[in-house]
Length: 395
Image (cartoon, rainbow, N blue to C red; front, side):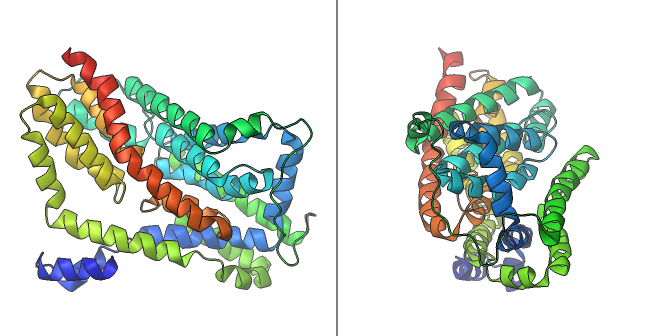
C-alpha cells in the first residue's frame, strides 16, 4: 500500500514524492512502537505476569465481568477529553484475557467499544467536534443525546461480542474453576516484586496518571511519547529487559497501518473522499442519501482519522437537514457514531493498538477477525443507526 500510495500520488495526483511520503503516519508509528516496547519490558521482567495473577486471584470465577469492567475503564478514560487516552488499558486487558481464558477478540472489542462510547461524552473530542459542528450549522444537537446514542450503540455491540466470542461459556463456568490459557512465562520472569518489578509498576501507574493529568489540563496526551519516556526509565533500571524488549516491537502492524493510512491520505488529497460525499448528497431520496453519506463516513474512517472524517462529512449532510425532511440531530448522530464504531479495524489507530497489545500467537487471528468486524460495521452500523434514528422522523 505504501508503494501504491507513491505510485498513485505521483502519477495520478501530481503530488511531489516528498508530500506522499510526508503522509506516512509517524504519530501512529510512535504510538505502536512505544506501547509495544513499554509493555514488552514489563512482560520480560515478570511484572505483567505478577499483576495478572494478582487480578485473577481477586476475580476468581467471575471472569465474565472482566470485559464489561474494561469497557467501563476504557470509556471512562476516553470520556475525559481524548478517545485515544482509553488505549492505555489495552496492553493490560489483552494479557489478562489470555490468562483468564477470555477470547482476546471479546476483550479487544470491549475496549474498542468503550473507547467509542466514551469519546462522544460532552467532554471528549468526538463529542466536541460533532455537536460543535452541528451548532455552527444551527442544528439543535443535545450533547447528552449524542453521548446516549453512542453509549447504547456500543453496548449493543458489546452484547454481540459476548455472544459471538465465548461470553455464554464464561457465564456458565463452574465456580472456583477459572480456565487459564497455558502461557509459559518469559525466561527469567518471576511473580515476586523485586526492584525492577517495583520500578515497572510505578511506571505503569505513572503512565496512567500522566495521561489523565494531560486530559484534565486540556492537553492532548501523546501516549506514544509517554510510553517511550517511561520505557526509557525502565530500560535504565533493567538494561537486559530493555534489550530483549526491542525484538518484541510489533513492526508488522506498524507497517500495515502505515501503508494503508498513507494511501488513504493520497486519496483524500486528490479529493476522492469529497467527491464521494458530494455524489451522495445529490441522491434524490434524502433517506438514501443520508445512508450513503454514513456508509462513506464509516468506510473512510476505518482507514483514516475519525475526527477528520467528521469535520469533512458533517458539512455535506447539512443540505439534507436544511430541506426539512430529515431530523438534523438524528442524521449527525448517525453519521458520527457510524464513523466511530469502525475504529476497531486493524487499519485504524485503535484496532492496530489492540492487535499490538495481544500475544504474538493471537495477532494473525485478531487481524483477520477485526478486519471482518470493522468492514461489517461499515454497512451494518449506518443501516441500523439510520433505521433507528433517521427513518422514524420521515414517517
